[in-house]
Amino acid sequence: MAKHIRYVGLDVHADSIAVAVAEESRAGEVRSIGVIPNSLEAIRKLVKKLGPASSLRCCYEAGPCGYVIYWQLTRLGVPCEVIAPTLIPTRAGDRVKTDRRDAIKLARSYRSGDLTAVWVPTPAHEALRDLVRAREAAKKDQLRARQRLAKFLLRRGLRRPAKTRLWGDCHMQWIESLHFEHGAHEATFIDYLHEIRHATERIARLEKSLDEAVEKMPVELKAVADALQALRGVAKLTAVTLVAELGELSRFPRPRQLMGYSGIVPSEHSTGGPGHARRGGITKTGNAHLRRVLFEAAWCNRQRPRISAPLRRRQESVSAEVREIAWKAQHRLHKRYWTLASRRKPQQAVAAVARELLGFIWAIGVHVERHERHNEQRKVA
Image (tube, rainbow, N blue to C red; front, side, top):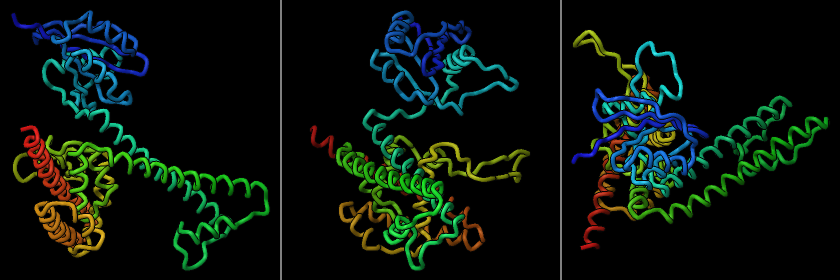
Protein backbone atom coordinates (compact mmCIF):
# COMPACT_ATOMS: atom_id res chain seq x y z
CA MET A 1 0.00 0.00 0.00
CA ALA A 2 1.42 3.39 -1.03
CA LYS A 3 2.25 5.81 1.75
CA HIS A 4 0.17 8.96 2.11
CA ILE A 5 2.60 11.91 1.97
CA ARG A 6 2.05 15.02 4.06
CA TYR A 7 3.84 18.28 3.27
CA VAL A 8 4.63 20.29 6.39
CA GLY A 9 5.43 24.00 6.29
CA LEU A 10 7.26 25.46 9.31
CA ASP A 11 7.49 29.20 9.96
CA VAL A 12 10.43 29.15 12.37
CA HIS A 13 11.20 31.83 14.96
CA ALA A 14 13.54 31.94 17.94
CA ASP A 15 10.87 30.82 20.45
CA SER A 16 8.03 29.43 18.35
CA ILE A 17 7.21 27.51 15.17
CA ALA A 18 3.95 27.93 13.23
CA VAL A 19 2.97 24.64 11.57
CA ALA A 20 0.77 23.94 8.55
CA VAL A 21 0.09 20.68 6.70
CA ALA A 22 -0.85 20.10 3.05
CA GLU A 23 -2.25 16.71 2.11
CA GLU A 24 -0.72 14.88 -0.85
CA SER A 25 -3.50 15.52 -3.35
CA ARG A 26 -3.34 18.96 -5.01
CA ALA A 27 -7.02 19.37 -4.20
CA GLY A 28 -6.38 18.17 -0.67
CA GLU A 29 -6.77 20.22 2.46
CA VAL A 30 -4.13 22.72 3.60
CA ARG A 31 -4.66 23.46 7.25
CA SER A 32 -2.88 25.18 10.09
CA ILE A 33 -1.88 22.93 13.00
CA GLY A 34 -1.07 25.82 15.33
CA VAL A 35 2.07 27.09 17.05
CA ILE A 36 4.55 24.95 18.98
CA PRO A 37 7.60 25.92 21.05
CA ASN A 38 10.93 25.89 19.24
CA SER A 39 12.40 22.96 21.16
CA LEU A 40 13.50 19.43 20.36
CA GLU A 41 10.81 17.87 22.55
CA ALA A 42 8.03 19.86 20.85
CA ILE A 43 9.33 18.85 17.40
CA ARG A 44 9.49 15.21 18.48
CA LYS A 45 5.85 15.36 19.62
CA LEU A 46 4.82 17.01 16.32
CA VAL A 47 6.46 14.25 14.28
CA LYS A 48 4.78 11.60 16.40
CA LYS A 49 1.41 13.34 15.96
CA LEU A 50 1.69 13.73 12.15
CA GLY A 51 3.77 10.61 11.48
CA PRO A 52 5.03 8.17 10.59
CA ALA A 53 8.22 10.11 9.98
CA SER A 54 8.87 8.56 6.55
CA SER A 55 5.54 9.91 5.26
CA LEU A 56 6.36 13.54 6.15
CA ARG A 57 8.11 16.13 3.99
CA CYS A 58 9.08 19.24 5.97
CA CYS A 59 10.42 22.60 4.90
CA TYR A 60 11.20 25.99 6.41
CA GLU A 61 12.82 29.22 5.29
CA ALA A 62 16.54 29.84 5.65
CA GLY A 63 17.10 32.51 8.26
CA PRO A 64 18.81 33.50 11.50
CA CYS A 65 17.81 30.24 13.22
CA GLY A 66 20.26 28.38 10.99
CA TYR A 67 20.04 24.66 10.35
CA VAL A 68 19.20 23.44 13.85
CA ILE A 69 15.65 22.42 12.90
CA TYR A 70 16.99 20.64 9.81
CA TRP A 71 19.40 18.54 11.87
CA GLN A 72 16.74 17.76 14.48
CA LEU A 73 14.23 16.57 11.88
CA THR A 74 16.86 14.60 9.98
CA ARG A 75 17.87 12.74 13.13
CA LEU A 76 14.19 11.87 13.65
CA GLY A 77 14.08 10.36 10.15
CA VAL A 78 12.01 13.15 8.58
CA PRO A 79 13.10 14.41 5.12
CA CYS A 80 13.53 18.17 5.38
CA GLU A 81 14.59 21.02 3.09
CA VAL A 82 15.65 24.57 3.87
CA ILE A 83 14.04 27.00 1.42
CA ALA A 84 15.52 30.13 -0.17
CA PRO A 85 13.24 32.96 1.11
CA THR A 86 13.73 35.25 -1.91
CA LEU A 87 12.54 32.54 -4.32
CA ILE A 88 9.21 31.83 -2.60
CA PRO A 89 6.36 32.80 -4.99
CA THR A 90 4.14 35.61 -3.69
CA ARG A 91 0.71 36.61 -4.94
CA ALA A 92 0.36 40.15 -6.26
CA GLY A 93 -1.63 42.30 -3.88
CA ASP A 94 -1.06 40.03 -0.87
CA ARG A 95 -0.47 42.52 1.96
CA VAL A 96 -1.31 40.37 4.98
CA LYS A 97 1.62 38.57 6.56
CA THR A 98 1.24 36.41 9.67
CA ASP A 99 3.04 33.33 10.95
CA ARG A 100 -0.02 31.20 10.25
CA ARG A 101 -0.37 32.42 6.64
CA ASP A 102 3.38 32.00 6.04
CA ALA A 103 3.28 28.38 7.23
CA ILE A 104 0.25 27.63 5.02
CA LYS A 105 1.93 29.22 2.00
CA LEU A 106 5.08 27.15 2.60
CA ALA A 107 3.12 23.90 2.84
CA ARG A 108 1.06 24.64 -0.28
CA SER A 109 4.04 25.78 -2.37
CA TYR A 110 6.15 22.83 -1.20
CA ARG A 111 3.45 20.39 -2.28
CA SER A 112 3.23 21.98 -5.74
CA GLY A 113 7.02 21.96 -6.18
CA ASP A 114 7.39 25.75 -6.44
CA LEU A 115 10.10 26.12 -3.77
CA THR A 116 13.87 26.16 -4.20
CA ALA A 117 16.00 24.47 -1.54
CA VAL A 118 19.37 25.82 -0.44
CA TRP A 119 22.48 23.72 0.10
CA VAL A 120 22.86 22.66 3.74
CA PRO A 121 26.48 22.36 4.92
CA THR A 122 27.67 19.67 7.28
CA PRO A 123 28.25 20.75 10.90
CA ALA A 124 32.04 20.73 10.34
CA HIS A 125 31.70 22.79 7.17
CA GLU A 126 29.38 25.25 8.89
CA ALA A 127 31.89 25.66 11.73
CA LEU A 128 34.64 26.53 9.22
CA ARG A 129 32.37 29.03 7.48
CA ASP A 130 31.47 30.70 10.79
CA LEU A 131 35.17 31.06 11.61
CA VAL A 132 35.93 32.59 8.20
CA ARG A 133 33.07 35.06 8.61
CA ALA A 134 34.16 35.92 12.15
CA ARG A 135 37.58 36.87 10.79
CA GLU A 136 35.95 38.98 8.07
CA ALA A 137 33.82 40.76 10.70
CA ALA A 138 36.95 41.44 12.77
CA LYS A 139 38.65 43.02 9.75
CA LYS A 140 35.64 45.30 9.23
CA ASP A 141 35.69 46.31 12.90
CA GLN A 142 39.41 47.08 12.63
CA LEU A 143 38.80 49.25 9.56
CA ARG A 144 36.08 51.23 11.37
CA ALA A 145 38.25 51.68 14.47
CA ARG A 146 41.15 52.96 12.35
CA GLN A 147 38.89 55.36 10.49
CA ARG A 148 37.54 56.81 13.75
CA LEU A 149 41.03 57.43 15.11
CA ALA A 150 42.31 58.84 11.80
CA LYS A 151 39.43 61.35 11.60
CA PHE A 152 39.90 62.30 15.26
CA LEU A 153 43.58 63.09 14.65
CA LEU A 154 42.72 64.97 11.45
CA ARG A 155 40.30 67.19 13.40
CA ARG A 156 43.13 67.96 15.81
CA GLY A 157 45.38 68.94 12.88
CA LEU A 158 47.69 65.93 13.34
CA ARG A 159 49.04 64.11 10.27
CA ARG A 160 51.36 61.15 10.19
CA PRO A 161 55.08 61.81 9.52
CA ALA A 162 56.24 61.71 5.92
CA LYS A 163 57.52 58.43 4.48
CA THR A 164 55.70 56.29 7.05
CA ARG A 165 53.45 53.46 5.91
CA LEU A 166 49.84 53.89 6.95
CA TRP A 167 49.19 51.77 10.06
CA GLY A 168 52.70 50.35 9.88
CA ASP A 169 55.04 50.03 12.88
CA CYS A 170 56.45 53.57 12.58
CA HIS A 171 52.96 55.02 12.19
CA MET A 172 51.70 53.19 15.28
CA GLN A 173 54.72 54.29 17.32
CA TRP A 174 54.00 57.90 16.39
CA ILE A 175 50.32 57.50 17.36
CA GLU A 176 51.16 55.93 20.72
CA SER A 177 53.51 58.84 21.54
CA LEU A 178 50.73 61.43 21.23
CA HIS A 179 49.20 63.24 24.22
CA PHE A 180 46.46 65.86 24.49
CA GLU A 181 45.99 68.86 26.73
CA HIS A 182 42.29 68.39 27.46
CA GLY A 183 41.28 65.39 29.51
CA ALA A 184 38.25 64.70 27.29
CA HIS A 185 40.46 64.51 24.21
CA GLU A 186 42.91 62.24 26.01
CA ALA A 187 40.11 59.88 27.10
CA THR A 188 38.70 59.77 23.55
CA PHE A 189 42.15 59.08 22.08
CA ILE A 190 42.86 56.26 24.55
CA ASP A 191 39.50 54.64 23.81
CA TYR A 192 40.05 54.74 20.02
CA LEU A 193 43.58 53.38 20.38
CA HIS A 194 42.36 50.59 22.65
CA GLU A 195 39.80 49.54 20.02
CA ILE A 196 42.50 49.29 17.35
CA ARG A 197 44.73 47.18 19.60
CA HIS A 198 41.80 44.94 20.52
CA ALA A 199 40.82 44.45 16.86
CA THR A 200 44.43 43.61 15.92
CA GLU A 201 44.70 41.00 18.68
CA ARG A 202 41.32 39.59 17.72
CA ILE A 203 42.35 39.16 14.07
CA ALA A 204 45.62 37.47 15.04
CA ARG A 205 43.74 35.06 17.32
CA LEU A 206 41.16 34.22 14.66
CA GLU A 207 43.79 33.69 11.96
CA LYS A 208 45.65 31.29 14.24
CA SER A 209 42.41 29.35 14.83
CA LEU A 210 41.75 29.41 11.09
CA ASP A 211 45.15 27.88 10.34
CA GLU A 212 44.41 25.08 12.82
CA ALA A 213 40.96 24.52 11.30
CA VAL A 214 42.41 24.31 7.77
CA GLU A 215 44.79 21.53 8.87
CA LYS A 216 41.80 19.55 10.18
CA MET A 217 39.65 20.01 7.06
CA PRO A 218 38.38 16.90 5.24
CA VAL A 219 40.89 15.64 2.67
CA GLU A 220 38.71 16.53 -0.33
CA LEU A 221 38.04 20.10 0.81
CA LYS A 222 41.70 20.66 1.68
CA ALA A 223 42.75 19.39 -1.75
CA VAL A 224 40.36 21.83 -3.43
CA ALA A 225 41.60 24.73 -1.28
CA ASP A 226 45.23 23.90 -2.14
CA ALA A 227 44.45 23.62 -5.85
CA LEU A 228 42.58 26.94 -6.00
CA GLN A 229 45.71 28.70 -4.77
CA ALA A 230 47.26 28.00 -8.18
CA LEU A 231 45.12 30.88 -9.50
CA ARG A 232 46.49 34.41 -9.46
CA GLY A 233 44.92 36.46 -6.67
CA VAL A 234 43.73 33.39 -4.77
CA ALA A 235 46.02 32.91 -1.78
CA LYS A 236 45.33 30.77 1.29
CA LEU A 237 42.68 32.94 2.95
CA THR A 238 40.77 33.54 -0.28
CA ALA A 239 40.87 29.83 -1.18
CA VAL A 240 39.58 28.81 2.26
CA THR A 241 36.80 31.43 2.00
CA LEU A 242 35.77 30.05 -1.40
CA VAL A 243 35.66 26.49 -0.10
CA ALA A 244 33.79 27.52 3.06
CA GLU A 245 31.15 29.49 1.15
CA LEU A 246 30.70 27.18 -1.85
CA GLY A 247 31.17 23.73 -0.39
CA GLU A 248 31.24 20.98 -3.00
CA LEU A 249 31.70 22.66 -6.38
CA SER A 250 30.47 19.64 -8.35
CA ARG A 251 26.96 20.29 -6.99
CA PHE A 252 26.78 22.93 -9.74
CA PRO A 253 26.30 21.01 -13.05
CA ARG A 254 27.65 23.94 -15.09
CA PRO A 255 29.76 27.02 -14.30
CA ARG A 256 26.91 29.32 -15.40
CA GLN A 257 24.86 28.10 -12.45
CA LEU A 258 27.73 28.95 -10.10
CA MET A 259 27.95 32.43 -11.65
CA GLY A 260 24.23 32.93 -11.08
CA TYR A 261 24.59 31.73 -7.49
CA SER A 262 27.27 34.38 -6.87
CA GLY A 263 25.07 37.23 -8.12
CA ILE A 264 27.74 38.53 -10.54
CA VAL A 265 25.56 38.04 -13.63
CA PRO A 266 23.87 41.06 -15.27
CA SER A 267 20.21 41.72 -14.61
CA GLU A 268 17.93 41.73 -17.63
CA HIS A 269 14.58 43.23 -18.58
CA SER A 270 13.78 42.10 -22.11
CA THR A 271 10.23 42.38 -23.46
CA GLY A 272 8.71 43.08 -26.84
CA GLY A 273 10.36 40.32 -28.84
CA PRO A 274 13.79 40.08 -30.51
CA GLY A 275 16.01 43.13 -30.50
CA HIS A 276 14.70 44.48 -27.20
CA ALA A 277 17.26 43.01 -24.81
CA ARG A 278 18.01 45.39 -21.94
CA ARG A 279 20.66 44.42 -19.41
CA GLY A 280 21.52 46.28 -16.24
CA GLY A 281 23.95 45.94 -13.33
CA ILE A 282 24.77 42.68 -11.63
CA THR A 283 21.93 41.05 -9.71
CA LYS A 284 23.79 40.88 -6.36
CA THR A 285 21.55 37.98 -5.39
CA GLY A 286 23.27 35.20 -3.52
CA ASN A 287 26.37 35.10 -1.40
CA ALA A 288 27.87 38.55 -0.62
CA HIS A 289 30.91 37.02 1.13
CA LEU A 290 31.71 35.13 -2.07
CA ARG A 291 31.39 38.27 -4.21
CA ARG A 292 33.78 40.21 -1.99
CA VAL A 293 36.70 37.79 -2.33
CA LEU A 294 36.05 37.31 -6.05
CA PHE A 295 36.26 41.04 -6.74
CA GLU A 296 39.47 41.29 -4.70
CA ALA A 297 41.00 38.40 -6.66
CA ALA A 298 39.82 39.83 -9.99
CA TRP A 299 41.87 43.03 -9.51
CA CYS A 300 45.09 41.01 -9.60
CA ASN A 301 44.48 40.07 -13.22
CA ARG A 302 45.14 43.61 -14.41
CA GLN A 303 48.84 42.72 -14.50
CA ARG A 304 50.42 40.81 -17.35
CA PRO A 305 50.41 37.00 -17.06
CA ARG A 306 53.44 35.76 -15.13
CA ILE A 307 54.37 33.28 -12.41
CA SER A 308 55.60 35.23 -9.38
CA ALA A 309 57.68 33.64 -6.64
CA PRO A 310 54.74 33.34 -4.15
CA LEU A 311 52.51 31.89 -6.89
CA ARG A 312 55.23 29.40 -7.89
CA ARG A 313 55.45 28.19 -4.28
CA ARG A 314 51.68 27.77 -4.13
CA GLN A 315 51.68 25.74 -7.37
CA GLU A 316 54.39 23.28 -6.27
CA SER A 317 51.91 20.87 -4.69
CA VAL A 318 49.25 20.89 -7.45
CA SER A 319 48.99 18.74 -10.56
CA ALA A 320 50.05 19.74 -14.06
CA GLU A 321 46.38 19.88 -15.16
CA VAL A 322 45.57 22.45 -12.45
CA ARG A 323 48.62 24.56 -13.36
CA GLU A 324 47.53 24.50 -16.99
CA ILE A 325 44.04 25.74 -16.09
CA ALA A 326 45.53 28.48 -13.90
CA TRP A 327 47.89 29.66 -16.65
CA LYS A 328 45.03 29.71 -19.17
CA ALA A 329 43.01 31.77 -16.65
CA GLN A 330 45.74 34.41 -16.39
CA HIS A 331 45.81 34.97 -20.15
CA ARG A 332 42.04 35.02 -20.62
CA LEU A 333 41.24 37.21 -17.60
CA HIS A 334 44.01 39.72 -18.36
CA LYS A 335 42.79 40.09 -21.94
CA ARG A 336 39.18 40.35 -20.78
CA TYR A 337 39.98 43.11 -18.28
CA TRP A 338 41.87 45.34 -20.69
CA THR A 339 39.36 44.80 -23.51
CA LEU A 340 36.64 46.28 -21.29
CA ALA A 341 38.88 48.78 -19.48
CA SER A 342 39.92 50.27 -22.85
CA ARG A 343 36.25 51.18 -23.34
CA ARG A 344 36.38 53.17 -20.07
CA LYS A 345 34.41 50.56 -18.16
CA PRO A 346 36.74 49.67 -15.24
CA GLN A 347 33.98 48.56 -12.84
CA GLN A 348 32.26 46.43 -15.47
CA ALA A 349 35.68 44.99 -16.34
CA VAL A 350 36.31 43.84 -12.77
CA ALA A 351 32.81 42.33 -12.55
CA ALA A 352 33.31 40.47 -15.84
CA VAL A 353 36.71 39.17 -14.72
CA ALA A 354 35.28 38.04 -11.37
CA ARG A 355 32.47 36.22 -13.19
CA GLU A 356 34.85 34.43 -15.54
CA LEU A 357 37.22 33.67 -12.67
CA LEU A 358 34.38 31.65 -11.14
CA GLY A 359 34.39 29.48 -14.26
CA PHE A 360 38.05 28.59 -13.73
CA ILE A 361 37.40 28.01 -10.01
CA TRP A 362 34.61 25.61 -10.98
CA ALA A 363 36.88 23.79 -13.46
CA ILE A 364 39.67 23.31 -10.90
CA GLY A 365 37.29 22.35 -8.09
CA VAL A 366 35.40 19.75 -10.14
CA HIS A 367 38.67 18.28 -11.46
CA VAL A 368 40.14 17.89 -7.97
CA GLU A 369 36.92 16.51 -6.47
CA ARG A 370 36.68 13.84 -9.17
CA HIS A 371 40.33 12.94 -8.67
CA GLU A 372 39.88 12.61 -4.90
CA ARG A 373 36.76 10.46 -5.30
CA HIS A 374 38.62 8.21 -7.73
CA ASN A 375 41.47 7.78 -5.23
CA GLU A 376 38.97 7.00 -2.46
CA GLN A 377 37.27 4.35 -4.60
CA ARG A 378 40.63 2.74 -5.38
CA LYS A 379 41.45 2.59 -1.65
CA VAL A 380 38.09 0.93 -0.90
CA ALA A 381 38.56 -1.56 -3.75
